[in-house]
Each structure stands twice: as structure tokens, then as C-alpha cells.
Amino acid sequence: MFLALLLVYFSTTFGLAQDAPTAANRPKLGLVLEGGGALGLAHIGVIQWLEEHRIPVNYIAGTSMGGLVGGVYATGRNAAEVREVVKGINWDQVMSGQIPFSSAVSASSSTLSVAASS
Image 1 (tube, helix red, strand yellow):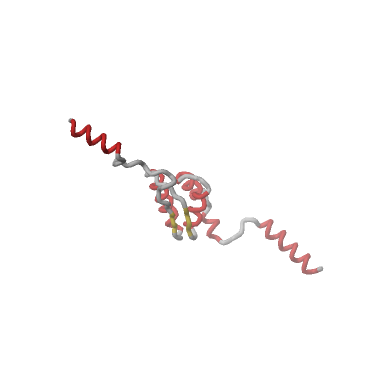
Image 2: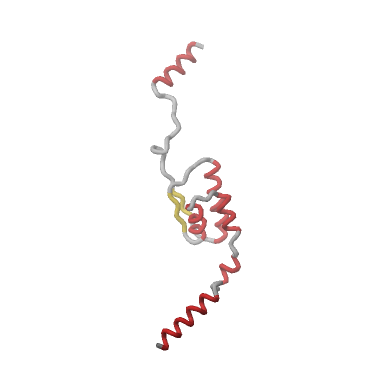
């Protein structure tokens, strides 16, 4: 019993106990998300895992679908909110290559034709 008390005393007195890292001295983490539409939900799963394990992300970068997921996450949303944003996208419309603003296209066409005739 005396030995256990002595060990506790010395470990706390001489700094042998480890403190949790503070924000100033913890390592920085960068998250890079690759492209590929099917990987989008996998990216969100990785972000969710990091959140569940309380691992903060300091930097985030991505290309294509990774850029979309990373960009939404970088705005301050959590993994569940990012998942809802991605689920809410009309992928058929996005992948069709068509511009959904037909009035904007016709307005710009008429402006071009007026400018060309003057």
C-alpha cells in the first residue's frame, strides 16, 4: 500500500502523468479526398469516423466529388449535414450537362444578338 501511494506521489509530482494535448501543441491533420462519384459517401463515412473519435481536421482538400464533400464540410457542417446535402442533389439533372436556367440562356442570347447587330 505504501509503495502504491509513493508511486502516485512521484508520478504526479515529477510530471510522469500524461496530460491531454492542448490545441496549441497537438499535431495538425490534413484530410485529402479524391474524386469519383461513388466515393462521395465513403468520404462522408471517413469524416463521420473522425468526428466520432474526436479527431479534428485542420485542413481539407479534394478533387471532383471529394471537393464537393470537402467544401461542404469546410463550411462548418458536420458529417450528418454533409450527407443530407449530398442526398438532396438531383444527380440526374447534374449529370445531364444541361443548364436548368433556360430563361438566363435565352436572355443572354438576345443580348448577344442585339450587340452583334449594332
